[in-house]
Image 1: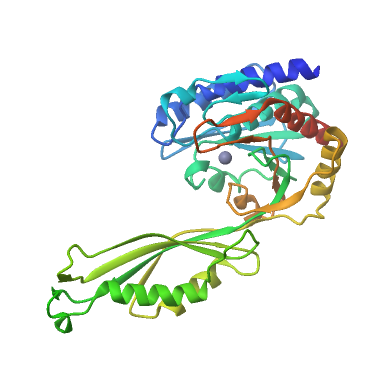
Image 2 (image 1 turned 45 degrees about the vertical axis):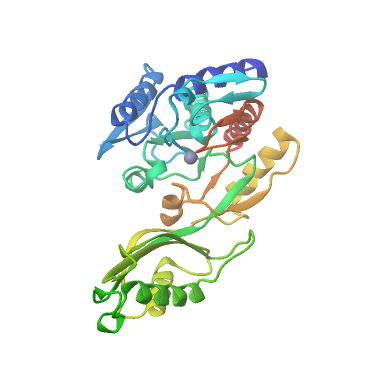
Length: 358
Ligand SMILES: [Zn+2]
């Protein structure tokens, strides 16, 4: 494929995919986009498996007879909410604008075109889900055990870097109780908000503020609720925190530390817990991908870590090496999201090069 026709195909297919309003509120569109992807491979000698769980649709496509591809491209077809006009893609110079342009309908388009061109090599597989933006628990989490792979790549936006580490996640809710009474005689009651704030101060000491970009465990106080009037002593209060941890600890240890810090009088509930995504930078496939990237792009890619989480953590948990490597772009989850077209074509050519060497 010439560079120009590759860019043209990528723009056309990404634009087509952006038109699907595939948000969590829109299960019919989640199905429609997966239907579209299934039809994309009509008449090809491939195995297609469809899944549906709680209205979240997924599809796995493998060359016939292949069980464990050398490379599995894992993509999500869902996007976060956007204004109506963001679902109408448009091009301006090297940028293609639209919801999901870079997160990650360009990455999805790369994987579909690459598979169509190279499925006969029997090296490549595709896994596409529609619940990444809400945690992936009905998508990749459920499919990971069914589909082994030698190596997994997700073309989420990475500005051309290879992301081999993403932090783990623990969300906690703290509940404090007290005894209600009139605010003029506080000694007759027990203030739940006071109890909660004291517990939170202890929790903060266990997970101190991180004030600059560094690879450390962090905690954010995300919400706090309690009380309804100045003159009433509240009998209940609660807050939620989002803890992002590194490989120096585990979800279990984070939860145990939090429990010790807040003490026994405060209720603690684990709202969510996700493992880390972690692949050794010297892993054979990572080194090969870096070499391919250098050959195609001309500069050595950064091999680095990311604070946010993605579906790849489920592969890490299953012991399958994985990395995130995708096109340049900006404003994902925001207004004016765009992908850089030349960068998307570059990612395609790097992955193609990798396949040749795999
Ligand atoms: Zn994404």
